[in-house]
Length: 312
Image (cartoon, rainbow, N blue to C red):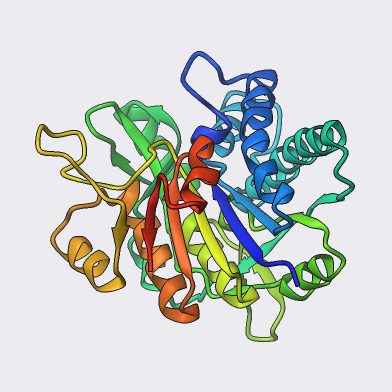
């Protein structure tokens, strides 16, 4: 029986830099990433792919801002759904073409995926995730007054809207993902952490204005599927202590206990590496299987213990 790998693709897999942000640029980056993923399929793994969507959601929100004088605004949950379709399409086509080139007969499907969060999650009382374009103080106050937005100053670059980032609790389409995997279909799911929804008092699903961390939702999916391996693909080949400093220390391996201590002592940045390490720790604790953090081009080398950071 083939082993199952869940690979979470970071934003670097689609947008390399500020000069390459168009849709063709993003597809070209996706093609490059998929060429690295094919190595897993050549080794006969079953594969689930998840992905980030932060920049793409920002683009949709910016277009919505610019067209507000004549078009309706786009709710945040719909933004996530839109990006799941668009990014999933890029991954499907790039992977299909690469598999065809190599003579590997596998089907790739993208699934619009909802992720349940708790309505009483403390994050809803403390919105902290910046989204969308930068605004002047005057525009930010106007949006706060007219649209009920919560805004904050972001690193001296202007004001931005902030929204809650609650913990993922349930993957609604989990059974459908299992069915696809039973047919050995390569499945793209939980894009952008999943469309954020809550269950109301009647048990009905309802979209909410929030964003879910992609790595934490990917870890939840990997745990629920009982994946044999969880890989977080990011911009760096290895996790480092003192990242970017003269005393930077790359890590080949970490135990769960060591990873938890590093988190407690603030070694990982809140908006970048911290959720990745937390996601890996949660996966390893729940399954006893290993997790890897590495860059796309090092995935196969990391499988062989020649690159990446393994958490086990």
